[in-house]
Figure 1 (cartoon, rainbow, N blue to C red):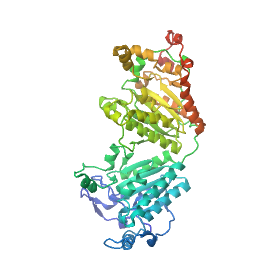
Figure 2: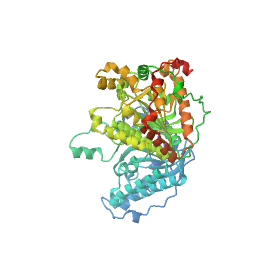
Figure 3: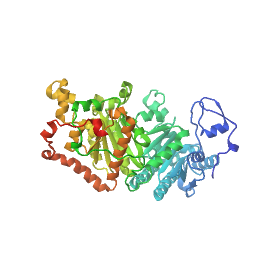
Figure 4: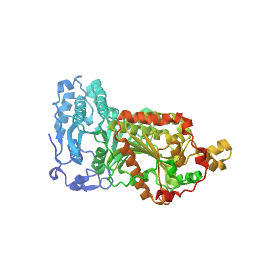
Length: 584
């Protein structure tokens, strides 16, 4: 039975159940049942949800067998009434034959399969019929080679079906695993409430978890937890806003913005296609990257250190606006947190869809403090590994932007396994079957930098640096005097020209007059061109070639005699132009 939201079945006035404000009925409908006064999101039925998300006229309900009550009620369950009577009442009250609606549709022209849970039908509980519908939706997405979007609303597994209901958690998880193997994007839209067996299976297995504002998500309900632990839980506990801070959801979106947000995610993460050379005509200037160290001016290493640390230099989040299109930030490591020093997401560059990972500092003391001065906790590296694995699943190139003094060396970071998370990141990157391009945009500090820089191609800004340790740290350890930092900087050969000569980087991007901090717009244009050139050069390689090339790139650092720079070339002064002259 199809449902249509019309003026005829919308009341003249609606009373908000949260703030008790009276809202004009048509306005309530236009605002997707969100109170314009307090932003409270009221529950909506499944058909209304489909209409809110899908393009008009695009909804094509998926064929499905009618429920078999005899097969469903395998226990003959009776509480205050027989289970069969409960099912009959739910069908009569809702006009539905189960808790899940599934349909092929499009969202802003992007094809998708939608599976929507309706809380009105026995609390959206997960039973055999709901499991069938969800698995069928996943199979339809697999057949059509399109993403699957599931909208969850459930109290958990259906008690009246006993252990058979419990088995639906495994069935749906297996269906999501098949979509992983096929390289198809899955998105969960978590609405209020999503608990129990649904939260502990497909709802939290999707590639991207979008929380609708104010929704609650958890395994056990608040009351059960409070009774178990014997104390009151904090306000906002289990809301998606609470879980966003703790790394368990990717984003929180108001219902009024949900459709355009899903459309962007679908465009960026749609079905795997062979990589093609990037469109160089898509507002991209000629690449200025220098791959010959002799073409670069000799500069004082300590100056490059100062320039790299200049707080006016564009940050990772600045570059998302200067270089990328349609950036969608993904939060959380899905384990313990969302490190603010590590930014990850989906985006596109000149028409090429990419996964982006980078370290974020800031321009002010407040911003630096907010992002932990660009020093990642273990959660940051776990988050980056998560989204890089998503890139591998979807067949998307990876771009990483390095700007960190190093991984955070604090007590909590050590307790959470800082060293192990960096090691795991390196291992994962060495096996990813997609192109990886790294740009050192500021400081390239030690293992914290390398942890996201095991790439096919590494490029660096002219006034950035990359080193095993900070100059000051080196001076303190070896000279016993941090004032010897400039001498250490020179000895470490950490400047871009020396790094290119050593083969640590593959190219140097000249900075505009006044440096990247002096003209961020021009800097963004140059970096965009450099990335387009690098991505285009890697697009023709297959997965095996990419992995082999990446491993061989680092294997060559075993031949130190071949890497040893000419002492004369590095130390003999020669008359060269300034960086600004060279850049122009």
